Structure formats: structure tokens, C-alpha cells
Length: 229
View 1 (cartoon, rainbow, N blue to C red):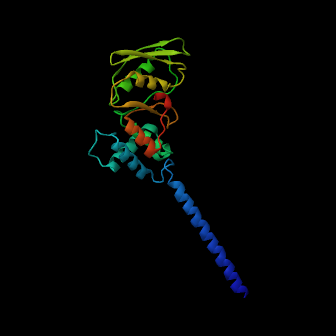
View 2: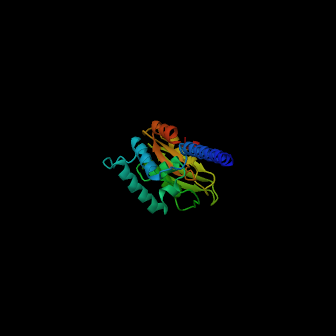
View 3: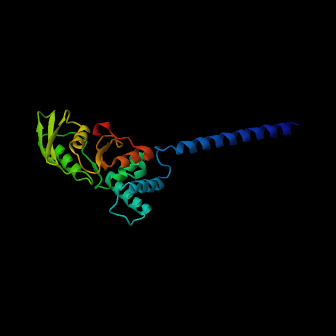
């Protein structure tokens, strides 16, 4: 009887452990499927990101390469640029997408994010680079007028023959409102400037149509900085 009782208790304990492990596995599976968590399979997720970005017009200059081949090349380029593997750099789907999208310089631009000084014309360079993005009007940088080294700074530019200006109140950091002023000054172009701060600062600038913007928000969990609207 003692042996039988011991066997019964052992069976109950083993069954309980199996249930606990199954429950943990189920929870982990559900958590891993969250849309904006770090990818469980970095290589597979990079391919998925490349495929999605291609669907909205990125990397149009390389239509022949398969998605997985292009993803491998871009991952290597990102690792060379940032000094770390893509899987370590990207903790969310938007971060992964941004890092990959930045490899298409026709559609994206990573602007300087802090410590602007008189005489460097950094804001004018930002204006010029934005005007070079595909689908946007040509912005012509005109002048930076600094009140002091601490600002404010008036950034003057023209677009489609009309002169406009934006005032940067604090030049220590990038002002995403500058991109909003560029958008407001333009009446043409199939795309608008959109700004992501997925990498920590609002300095990733992309040329996107309204439908492309909506696709990134709805399907990839992107959030765009409101000051650029």
C-alpha cells in the first residue's frame, strides 16, 4: 500500500509539472507574437521587413534581387555602419524597419540630431537633403540667421518660387517642426516628409504618401512625430 501511495503521489507531481511547462510555453508563444516585440528570428523578420518596405516602394532600384538576398546584404551594411548586428540594434518592428529603410537614401534621411552651431549651416543642409528625397518638391536653402549661439535661429528657404522660414527656438537639438514647415510650404509632390523617433531622436526623415504612412502605422506599428504633420 505504501508503494502504491508513493507511486500515486509521484504521478500527480509529474502531471502538475507537465501542466506548468505547457502553460509557460503557451504564454511565451503568445508573448512572442506581439507585433512590436523584438523578433524571435532576426533573419526571418528582416526578410519580412524588406518585403513590406518593397511593397510600398522602397528599394525600387533593385527589383531583381530576392527578398532574402537583399535582406542579407542590408543586414551586413547595417552592421558595418552601426558596429553591431541588426538583431541587437532592433528591439521592435518599427526600429527594425527604420534601420532597413535608411539604407534606401532615395526615400529616407537620418538628419543630425543635436548640437548645431553658427557658421555650420547644418539646418540648410537638412533643408537641401529633404528636397532631394524622391517624390518631394525641391527645397532651396537660403540662409540661417542666428540671434545668438543659444538661438533662436531663423531658417529661410524657398520652394516652388515662394520663400518661407522656420524658427528653431533651441538649436541644441533637432527641431521636428522644421519638417512640418517644409511640408506646409509645399503644395506639390506625391509624398510628404514624415518623421520617426524610433531610434531615440526625431531625426529619421522619410518621404511617404498618405497610404504608405497608413500602411506602416497599421501593419508595422509605426508612430510618426506630430510636429512634422
